[in-house]
Image (cartoon, rainbow, N blue to C red):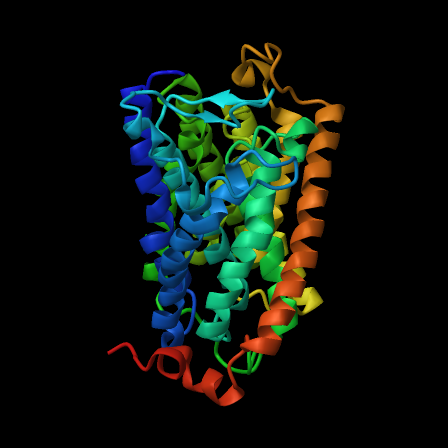
Length: 423
């Protein structure tokens, strides 16, 4: 058993706080700034409520399903209610834990399990919060609460196990996802699109004024997301090391590339670069580099950011309009599409020495073979997310109800769902 490394633990404590900052207040402000005034509070409460709900779900069963040993498909219940997490204190040792202990793929850690599971909890929190952007301004809060519990256990936890558990079957294919391109972004983006299609378009879309209430909120939220993303990506090195430093650098470069890429395409097509456009581009760059951050050099990160900025602009501003679906805040257009772009381009730009380990001295390098593995991981994530999300949405809609009435939607969700309003 390895001893706990205080430097690694300190960095992971900071990274955990940074990732939590991404949801509350980061995502809450980002989304709230893009909806209409009558839905600002309800949009923020969705992120806040999901943070509370998923924290409990993760403690009770989610962590166990995602990261206990189990099988290649799902973890077992050995960490139900976090059973065994405090064992190091009972034993009076200063030993770190081993992920997948007792298996051929076990991974020794240099941080306490309490820190690791809390760090992973913040990922589990932000993923369902992200998909709320697809059906913003028309969701029943009670339905969202039930949907979040079921989706976290039946969609998020299995995919996290497949990709990040040492026993996970997707990891066994050789596909890589450094910080959540498949687990977080493709998963949430695709699920958001399914929900948007099933719940239907907003009342008055293309007829009423749907202008954002306060883009200053959105800019502040995007800024918090940008800062928090360093914990998201650099923290995924799981220690204070050179790989974390490179992941932080590639994250910054890709974010800048995404902002510039979206801005240039928008400027060319519409004659003016918008505030909403540049912050959306930055988020697209951050999303796309997430699966690649610990595997690519800065030049590859720049290419990923620029490509993602342009592709996500097309998806959010052109494709959505042509196909007629109402992805309110572009959860699919930015997170789903950006995650797909980033996961695939990881197979193109990966630089072997960055991911080299004692068990894999060659590391992961860009190649046709690696691109094929990445595509397989993307396809599996999409299929699972589409099927399970549709089933969960249908079930919750039939039992609790997922959409507010047209009268409540016109009134605004702040009053209709929470009995409050902005002054």
